[in-house]
Length: 194
Image 1 (tube, rainbow, N blue to C red):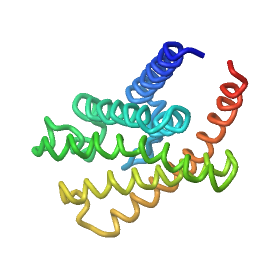
Image 2: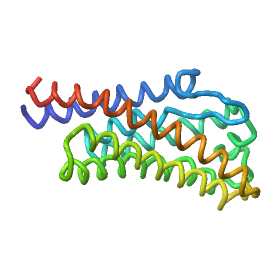
Image 3: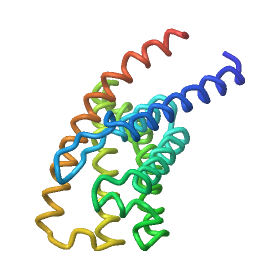
Image 4: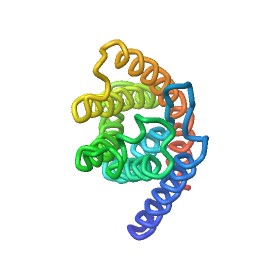
């Protein structure tokens, strides 16, 4: 396959995954609502794209995820915690921007790098599942840690632990199962030279 064809394929794949992110961000498809918290599955297309296309594309997808979450928090906030992700509502625009974008970019980069690391040690399925779970855990720690550090949003240790454990567990399970289920057949298809 020519270099131009590869670049075109990567651009199309990135565009499709960003479009999927947008649909998920602005519809109920991307969130599991369990009041008072919302559990997101928006990280899963970032992980899938990162594993299939590498850390640079993963970072781009993560950046799109961060910008979409910022737009959603600015115009469609569904809880007071969502307002912290909006540089226009939080009262601390730089911190909101960092919290929205940096952990999401790193999510994509870490997912790709972790997959490459674990693929050397295990087969495809375990590497897909473990890298997706660990990338999700790192993302959750970065986002919740940023909320705590920048906004002192969760001063009560018990509240933080409850939200972190519920969100993290559900998001990690979803990422591990869905990333492996989606990536494995796509990898097989791509390896056949389609």
